[in-house]
Length: 96
Image (cartoon, rainbow, N blue to C red):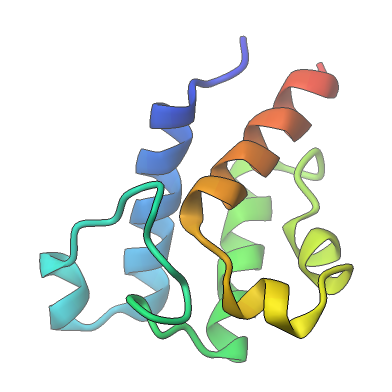
């Protein structure tokens, strides 16, 4: 069964908090509209760590690193969590 968008959001928000691992992230409300650049201020090494955690959680069905690699820099800078959640749900729904 494919997880809902809300279920994926909760998982990815938890993974983001693990990657950032700073006190301030515990207080940040992470929603579908949360910006990786503006609100979370993720650096490239943190994106790599997040990609590893996403793959560890969901398996090879979700190639987050490959998906990011295909993006232009302005797309990555403007990336919001909802787009990541939709990508993950789409991967999980088509690979069962």
